[in-house]
Image 1 (cartoon, protein in one colour):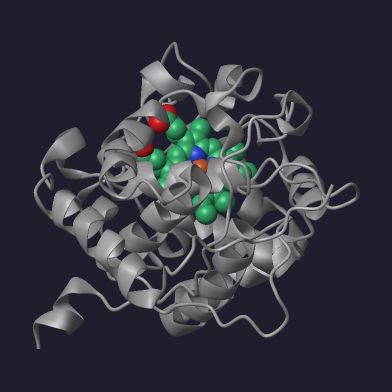
Image 2: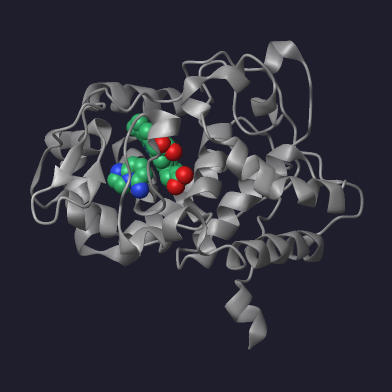
Length: 291
Ligand code: HEM
Ligand SMILES: Nc1cccc2nccn12
């Protein structure tokens, strides 16, 4: 399946920086959403789920076609709650009719990471809105949080990621929270959930116990009982091939930022062919434009 990037006629860096700035402004106007988590987590999860359907062996899935709104992908239980992110962004599809869903949804994640203090994320436009039932991925490609380390390792390997990249990507769980009405898992994550940091790894290396409740198996921290981890999060400290990266990132936020930036940029472009030598955009943050 060939998916070739096609940039809308005459659109360049400035055009996409304008979209970036509009998204950033709307995030800024809604910081108290979701108990103070804001929209950062929602937008990063949307960008990840539109991309994480990718399978390297047959080059299917990925962010190119913006197919998440079509069945059967729209019915994938793992995508519950993502209408929040899509609805947040939809006004920019009207304002900038030339932008594709895939470009808008992945750009939304880039804005969220950069505006919450995270690393710069290289990003390229050119995804195309397509409706061809044959290109809509079947449910089951996105990870189930109740599983173990081997499952996580194999699922990310299907996308073409190694152990280091897998651990780096899941560090995005520093943002946002779980919502029982979406996944059955219960938030909270705490005061740092609107800041992109290596906090996830630092906390993960602390003490955790299984939460006593009638919901899905999940963990809460020994110290305050106010943070949570999924079983697949805990798997990162249970497997020898993951734990070494957890420790590296807990010690060195710059290293985490460097590895996350590369892996996340790759994730958002899985399956897409770009013209040789096409240079990614590195958008300025809102703060950088005020100087
Ligand atoms: C083993 C892999 C993963 C599993 C099983 C997993 C599972 C989950 C679950 C169950 C939630 C809660 C959804 C809700 O209840 O609203 C969640 C939230 C989230 N996930 Fe993951 N995830 C994984 C990897 C990733 C990756 C690779 C990224 C990004 C690069 C990511 C970004 C997020 C974010 C930002 C949230 C918070 C969403 C919000 O605040 O609404 N996750 N994840
Ligand atoms: N914020 C958040 C979302 C999803 C999973 C997760 N594990 C720890 C924190 N966290």
